[in-house]
Image (cartoon, rainbow, N blue to C red; front, side, top):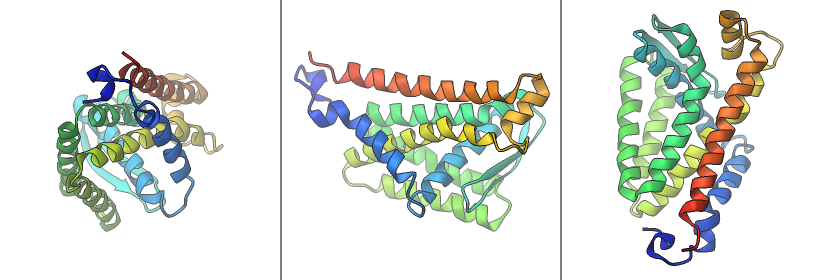
Amino acid sequence: MENSLKGKPASFWQKYQLYFLLVAAVIIRQIPIVSIPLKWLETYFHEISHGIAALLTGGEIINIQLFATGAGLCTTQGGISFFITFFGYAGATLWGWLIFKLANSHQRTAQIFSGVMIVLLLTSIVLWARDLLTMIIIASLAVMFVFTVKMRKLYYLQLLLKFFGLSILLNSLFSPTYLFDGRDLGDGAALASMTMVPELVWVLLWCVLAIVVLYSLIKSNKSLHSYT
């Protein structure tokens, strides 16, 4: 239990932990080789969000592809195209929020979530991965979560999962802006063709959603670690 919940002032680290993790996520994203597993993780959550939206609207996932560069592709059939397309970035934002909140709530909750992620990743390999590279990348992510479960000190597991959550949120904030490449491709262009609403509007909507979610985490963090 946090010190602030015991009636004691929160420590400096407890009060500003989220900001330190956020800065670390920003820095590590800029390091070429080290950032690759994070890019894979972020892309996986983006693509699985497309897939989950397809399943929830009556469709199915045909296959998920992840590439060494950090790009990805989810092929679906059936379902409601609008929701499937929209929930790539929006879903990743919600994943980032959920991971941070669960990890921040309790150490055992963080451990259970890591176990659930291992099951989801292995399921993705069995049901939706069709090429060797995708299988290897998803298996690497599963191994990464296996190591988190094996951590002796669950406090470090919490920190790592919170770091993952913030990294995914940052990706959801900045990645939509990459759609402005002049090629008229990607989720924003697809939504624009479906709705006649300009791609810029969808990109801004995804970015604003990520900012609102990140702000909510910062605000709840301040409330949790306020003086009592």
